[in-house]
Image (tube, rainbow over all chains, first blue to last red; front, side, top):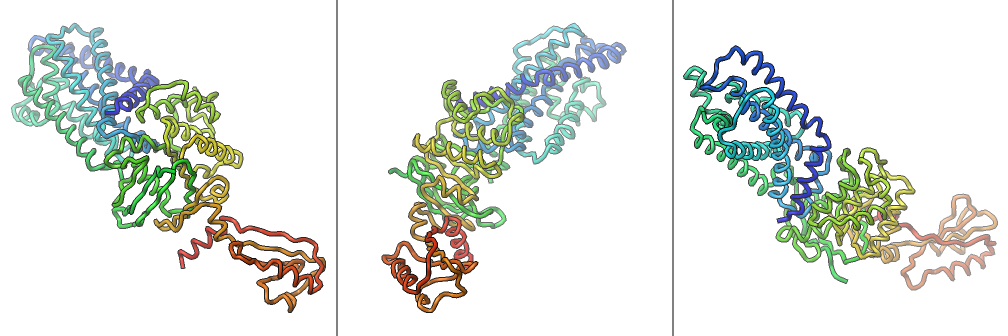
Length: 253
Length: 309
């Protein structure tokens, strides 16, 4: 293993994050605060408690997941797409690194950024609502796994994309709807039975449900199923990355 | 001398069927400067890309410093530094950070004294904290060289290093290359500019349509293929070659004030003595005598013509 290369890529990417710290942090914090104002205060005050949890507190795990998933994807996809776009990718290809090291550097940095943003949003939510975390370690584990899986997914997206439009396409058309329909703002038990069944085909449901369980000890699907779902997603992404590594898909001519 | 780069039967065929490289064989000795000359689309960049790991060859083998670029890619790539043709740098990054990044990427630990020395040599030290986008085109090229040298490679590839740079910077670049050679770095450069090859290369390779037409020592190449011209300037103009001088390969210069004799320097007898005797016997009065060596460019053009024929 060329650990020096992994560290170089990781540090380089994190430096970019800290260089644009204002954009990196302020925008997710502001948008999350807006969600709290709209859903928590304005609408939430008219909503009844869900299994003993106030609506404002109920949406906290969903909001964190929403931001963490989109941030992991956008950071990782941009991180690897940018060198392709400006032409500096040649250096990665000619360096004594294998693809796993490249992935560890880029996806690791993207996951770290998303994780930090997730923690900051959690901190912000304490300003708005009263919450206690029932299973803090499980909460952190879910957060880390989600960050890593979606960073891997973002990395694949960045390798696949040929232009900035494609880079935005999947997050906008696929990921955002899945997250919104995955129970970020509601429990799927609130849906009619048919839609409950359909929702079970949405992988994000399992992630949000598991994460919410770590907060409140309640979930739409059993927590073991959630863990299994995120492990499967992680494995699929990892397998795909391995395949890219073997074939040089979209990387080497 | 040890062979530092060994390319054997290298082929590259693209998905569309285009054969960019056709059975390339090339051996480079440690410490030499090889200039690869060739027109656009000849395969120069493809060859470099294959050696550096950017393009996967279709067939053949390449080893760098004794390491196969596939089975022992880490050791092979550590020995190589690449300066690409296009200026590809992250615009928002600081000069020193991008150089440190390259060093780390190639598995070398952080060494501030080495990086400082490198940047000083390339006149970049004062700009170390500048963002790349604030630099001129010439400075950016220097940054690319600094990045390529950051991990102390034994072989440096310069892909068209002076394309589009001004005369002064080109001379600077040649000085840098000369310094690197003194340190024992092997340099392979591709160029359009024949004068560049003529000025700095030890050996010259000519590549055209994916094939290496020849690789030879520059001096020997020019000696072997170089034709020389002797120009005899006359005090009074003439309209045609005088009868008594017809046996020599002569032509009359443009204004009739000179006779031009083309000869081969490699032949035992150049015929100069007899020519000058005959000119004297003809009673022509001489004003000056001079000789001209044909340039690498003439050789290059004639080689490509032969290849096309």
